[in-house]
Image (tube, rainbow, N blue to C red):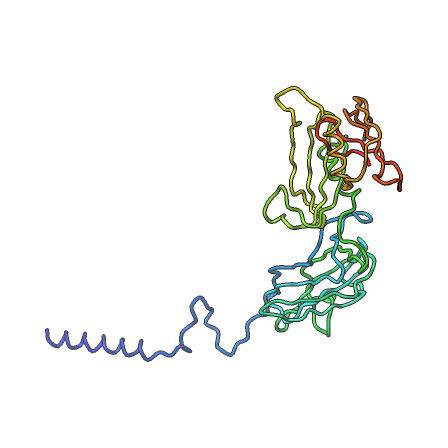
Length: 321
């Protein structure tokens, strides 16, 4: 019995010694294939993580839509598994192929791990196709149709149709474009637009302080619709419907004195004097008939021309001039 126990103990010690003397080179890595340490990994295709062009908005152009970019935009790309990143410029045609010769090759500057940046200062005036491509790490197999940069294949990651504004072009929506967006809400509304450099009224906190078009449709009894539109992106910030001031009671028009005070405040000239005031229920303005005060005003001194101011009889809003 003792001999059997001794033999069993010796066998266990031998197995334990074999396990503890094995080296890491003799064992496959966790989840690995057991290849030797000197064996090269197969090259991986670069993967796009993020691509930012600093675009303002999507606009109709030519046969379709383009991304509108500001003058001198900054392009950034985060790409894993890339040795270098480039932007290729092609003519804006639907029949583009990888065999076409690019108009220009823009080299991205490495600014961090897997991140490249380009300050685009010489963009063409016409729309172009902007192709983000990446040079893979290692010897990546690529066909002849793949464009080469510096003799290396540059694999296409994203193809975007863009139009870059000139240095003297305004990045903002025009008044006509803003009104067209408001007409999507109320096609026949008597819209009046004003531009605000820093919007501060309705909408989310993120929209505060942004340039915006504020459009108001004011109706005969004083109810109104107010629409705020981001002047850069064209996104709708807020839509507000307001009932007339007399909502729930009888409509009461402003007195003559109240109408004159409202006119002087909005015209910004307290020296104007009243020559004549006429109340009407048939003032035609922007396709609607309004209750209004029509005021003939003259400068306090004998210099300058007369002014005809029209005030909404229920809200005191200056309709004209």
